[in-house]
Image 1: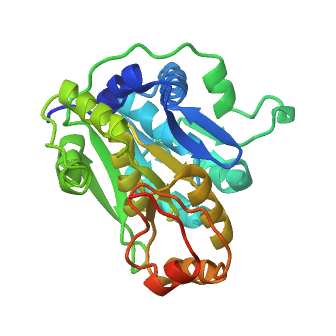
Image 2: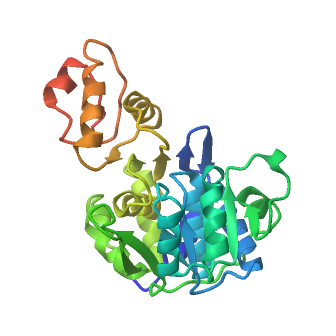
Image 3: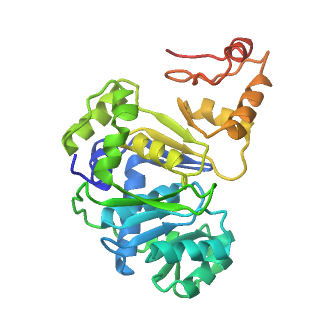
Length: 325
């Protein structure tokens, strides 16, 4: 399907705008609200000179803002780049020299690293600060607060984007220097077709209209995914599953900060999460241990398809977890 991800999300927002699309601690956004904020952010970035082919570095933890920045870049034909938010200034600067972005999104707590990068990386023209309280006043140039950028711009006018638009993903940094992998949108949609559309019993769409119909069908049948990415969105695993959830009009539930297994299960119950995205026993084992601690108590973990097989069957029986088929 020769269509950009942003164009598909725009079309889904037009018909499913009232559905909850993104949830983070303390904030919930409908698909329509998320689309509008991304469009306002896109307009703000365009006003700062960011356009088609420019790279936009995302040096931020999991948040609704991460997805808004991703969507905004797609609207402009810009190329999002994932950046490990655990990097110090030296690692950050080295990575940015490699990918040569025009804009850098960063959280307030990492501003010292970001300002060093803005002073050192020639390609960088603007820093977008995330999470700054209003009392901080006007930030130093060339930095702008993301909420101010959104609030001061009307939504960017839509321009259909092709499937040849790109996403830049650094991978493999845990075992050596990270390697940049460039994905065309149409190739990523193809890779996701079986675990996404096939999993829902749907044919892979070939047009925007078919993609919207698939999202509506999964929603009406109660099969639209509610996904919680426990892994960071800066990793391809968390990012790709979340992108897939958005492609079928599902709900993306985001966690941030230190892993809190009990909070994970509370959110699974509250948001009816049916897909947990995690990586390895370092995350999986604490989750199972937290579930084991619920043995003998009534716990409402109703999901549409139940929890995944790595949760031990004995724990499920003893904890009297409730399911809906």
